[in-house]
Image (tube, rainbow, N blue to C red; front, side, top):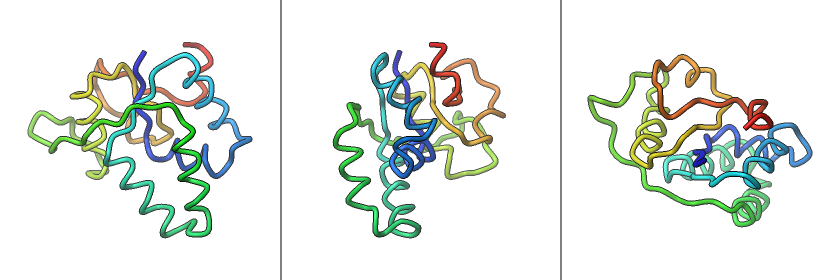
Length: 129
């Protein structure tokens, strides 16, 4: 299964390496192909520069050690599903165009999407797939 990672998953797993999200991400990495879009990478850098500037090196080490594919972020268009947070639309568009099976996220806005594919997964669901 190909799983796109959302920004909040990567922030949580890198800041709290012993936490539940990090454990779920580790399980996902062992069983599935992880995909990160360039929009998420840009968001990660922005979040760390604002909130965790002293942990940017930790983020770099974490991302470098994580087996993943990088995909580009296409432009949002009329067929991109509407979302409350416009900043999330590039992620869903990238997931659709990268043909991933699922998005791993803790962002509640993704759970309101009415789409068949990609599936929207919570970290706690990873143990079941």
